[in-house]
Image (cartoon, rainbow, N blue to C red; front, side, top):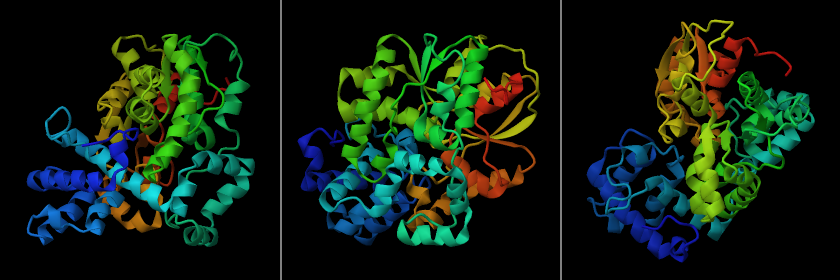
Length: 420
């Protein structure tokens, strides 16, 4: 099966249909992923309707599972037939290929044009953050947004920051010193949650580790991939690699401040670009939570905590698991004396832009039901998640955005609100 968008076969519709039918036949015979996401029940229902004959599937029945796939990557983790198995099955990348071919043929849907360009949303929203945030809270404006753009009016949306993170970092004392690491800030931190970036730099500074925030970073490209916009994702990847490659070549770590972005830099950039520079950036990239967790495991993380944390409820995001980071946040947070971490290992049903769209909102809520139930029951505890987009689901039952693990670490050191 072909998963490389730089290969000619990738864009061949007849080859895609052959690969999808082969994949659906494998999945229908296995069914380990039945309960993971809406794609698989829909797939199995279609195949059963044709007496298990995948050759009779219609074009609509082939494409529908791709629309329902939100790239959580959990099926890849569970699948026994992933490469190097001879079946060579990578279901998420096959669904992405389906979307990419349709997008190339029919063009991007308007909602995907909007959501696939979070830099533009962020730049516009942070020009007048007060007005932007009022608009995002206004029932009338939200219904208009749903009608015009396709973003569900019921979905909690992230607040726009008064000061963008890169501007704060530029004005920070000591920013001109030679760096030890580079931060890939992500659109989420740059425009919506600068506190995550501030906490990261404060904790790094507390350990005499200097961080650089390279200028002109772009979105990682995952929102573009969500809409099947391969060229848009590749363009962003090319610019980010140009910016980050010198750090990787100098042996410095690149700390991504959101798990999805870390996953994209590590797993998607080498395939999208196929260059040595992309491979070097991939190898140098780490999720920021894992970076500090590894320091804790090596006993390099300071123990001079000023504040206790107590018991908190932590959401383990899909893209953290996809990187093999099941224990990173728990190991980091329990390094703080007296901290108890209750882990909620459930998908939030947001996964990039999928859960924001009106057409998938109800499905998103079904996917997230066990997650929201867990946080509803733990409403009196600190809510924590690495993934700010997953936090939009958690916020529906806690009424406030969950904290990132590094924000909790910073607060434990007593440097949460210092203007460093």
